[in-house]
Length: 533
Image (cartoon, rainbow, N blue to C red):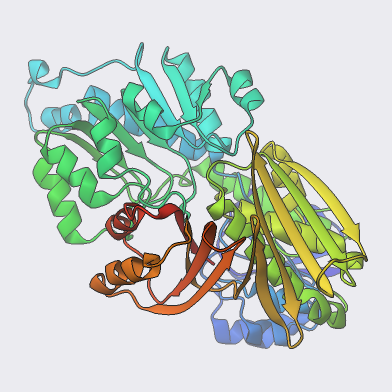
């Protein structure tokens, strides 16, 4: 008999699935205090939570029988994943349960700002009948631009086509075949798409790549009278730039379910409110998953996952990969960390979306090739998807995204005792990064493209190719100094004197976009990227 404890409210359909299983005893305590939870947790084989319950190291230490933690939702910030992994406790979640809810909210907002639905409603409630005041625009015949053609973006595309819209999409991590199946034109360049669209909707995760993706330059490219919808993540649209282009009259309608800070500061809401007479504004408090159906899906999926885990069956949405033998984890953890950092570095260093990944694991770590290779993919994919990726599901997610993976393992290694190399390919271009772990568990990046380097893969890196001539670092240092950005370290790699060199600066603070643009204008610098690890 398995004992399952539910510590947060979930829909009754999920509870019923658990109760119907003769091998399960369910204890439903949706408002249990943390102190009481600590007392009773040793009795239970599984726990199901939402965001209210902190699944801490202290809790897991006391949970002597615990086999699985079920998170009813996508986020697992309240769960100590590392401690659960060490103790062989599986953590599962429910990604995709709110896809339709978020899709329909997007369409609701789009129709609202284009047909003045909210304003017309308030007009009638005010005992008025100003029909001529509420002229709107039809979706039919308009061009919709979608940033992010994942689960939600794809569903929005299908419904937009049903409205008679022409649909364009920008997503460098989606295969063209998927867009073709949806009847969507996949564009290679975001800026080209922005010039054509009447409506923009965003369905991408917030990453270093997508933060402030829509800012001054992007608004300038759009048509006058464009409509903007964001039901994905705050921070993808630069909110100051959005306000400025609303004030200029460039943006005719804005619908936001998400904000850079949640709840949004009163001053930002006041600025939107002040513009609502000239711009259609539709706001909601991050309610994409707030449908009865979504919550029912969450409860059903988490219950099914927990039952499978308890019975030793394959689960679809595992967040971690438990190591029953802690000595194995201790042995390979530095290499897993390095592999993940190499993936994170590469996806930011690559100029375009990655289509193919070649992974080499050499030396005496070759026997652990599978988890190390998965960790590389985890580092890449975490930058491009909005749900948890782990070394269990990384290969499946890569396949779903149309990324081809080549693998090579060998005990032979040219330069180091251990060696991990990753090559990313896209449209005939290659980007390379490789690294090792020195004695004392010191991870290092040892190769970037054709250059030999020695870099600690940590923090904020400014990586640039430049003509190998005097004065480049001086110019760069002057710009960073004026911006009050401190250089914590510097490394240089080059093929030959006077040729092309690569420089890597470790920085204490991130570089603002305008400072990065100034660096790009240094004549001797050929290519520059800010990378956060």
